[in-house]
Image 1 (cartoon, rainbow, N blue to C red):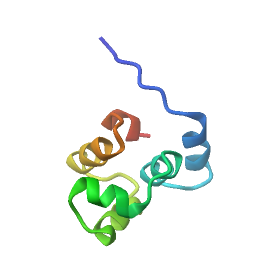
Image 2: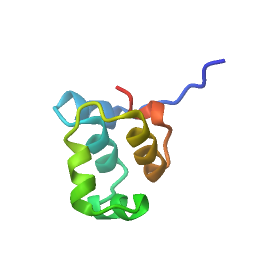
Image 3: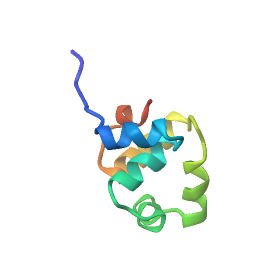
Length: 77
């Protein structure tokens, strides 16, 4: 059974404009890098590096998705 996890148009538009899915979601959710980093238990600079990676490791995507309160599948674009 496939679970449908929609991706908002605003997120897709940001990705089309050149942002990574992680950054597009963070901006859509109106979170700062510092807020996400605190949720993940890492530094802001460590999190900022993850935003530049086009396809982060699965475990990293899962941690970021948890911090965003979305599914990891929603980060896989």
